[in-house]
Image (cartoon, rainbow, N blue to C red):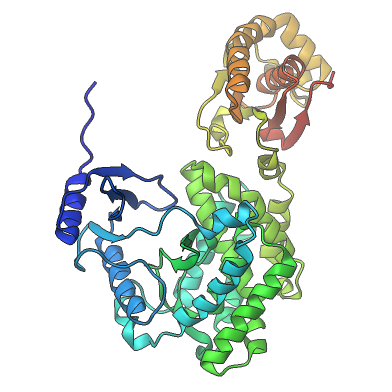
Amino acid sequence: MDTMPDPNIAPLKALYANHFGKETDSVARLPQAGSDRIYYRLWTKDKEESAIGVFGPDKAENLAFQNFSRVFQKEGIPVPGLLSPISLSNHYLIEDLGDVSLFSLIVNRDSKSKGIEEDSMRLLARMQTVPADSWHQFQLSGDFCRRQILWDLNYFKYSFVKPAGIGFDEERLENDFDRFAEDLYIPQHLWGFMYRDFQSRNVMVKDGKTHFIDYQGGRFGPCVYDAVSFVTQAKAKIPEARRTELLKTYADEFSRIKGTNPVEILRYAKIFALFRTLQVLGAYGFRGLVQHRAHFVESIPDALSNLGNLMQEEMANRYPELKGIADKLTKEQRFNAIKEPPGKLTVSIFSFSYKKGYPDDFSGNGGGFMFDCRALHNPGRYEEYKQLTGRDKPVADFLEQRGEADRFLRSAWEMTDKSVERYIKRGFTNLQIGFGCTGGQHRSVYCAEATARHIANAFPGAVVLLTHREQGIYETLNSTRQ
């Protein structure tokens, strides 16, 4: 079957030929990260002349990146060089910085990572203190302000809290947000180039030297935001003591350049760490819970751990409704379940009500089975069973004797068992199985319970997570459960 050619290849090849004076021998699309931009590597057979081609759907964002790059390169900040003329286009070419990010060094516990972390903190301070009149005109949005703060706080509310199904008092939360916005407006002598997404994934290491990427969202704002963004990056898991060291390195360098007091900068670290954590949870909610991108879902537990720690600080008492929401989120077993050790198959089994929609897939796998139990005889139609659930023996007896549940489950297990067996053999990590009925109380609960016990006993190598969504029950089963 023929496939459509990639429409980005031809314009990127033309940019390559224009810059190097020769045709490229090879073009490879690189793995896509969190943004909608698509990256390609273009090179010749001798690999002496390689470049990174970029397709960005947002032309204004592309232009901002190119203009910022020209400014920072002129100021000696290590950013990728531009290999194509600055233009309002969907395509541009930049220097190839390789494939090694600081994040990869951190997670692999490379001994070089500590020195590069410290170097990144000092370079960040240098980048932020580049005179604003050289770059301010190129920023995409207005300066950091109350409106932008409330956008991010409501991003957390609408893209994470509400999709997660956490109850709260909206008016009281908005009162907290108003106080939060006031507290974030710090003195402007501590402002500069606010990178906006400074994290170890955006620090590339080539020939032992540090380079920054993905700063197109930069704007004039509080600089400490970027420093805490770096040290609190969820999946980097930088220990608390190391975070303190890195923040001090940053504050010392920023103060040396600006003539400020490091203590004044560090005073605002905790509140901006909280702000950043809420902002990234909004992003994880949208990209993970709504768009079902696994990378973002996997980051949720660590971000919630950050949130829980920050809510122990004195400042959190100013935001009581937000503190209550954070307490509920950090106790949610469905998010904690994402922490299951890698390498083992996790089978997530749900009961749910069709009236409230299908269960979320927090693994990002997107596959599995959904079984409709509404064809079974419904014990909920009888008064004596209405206050019970499928976990109660009278309901189980009813379904086994009068509801044809046994035949239904045997048919379901014939399909699910084959998948579980194959997933284990192939090293897959997640499989979801759902049972739905009208109210998510009787038939679906019974079938989910029976299936969880069946799989736990039949496949000792699998972790079985059982969720009765409408009952608010979350359990982990293993092969020893009877």
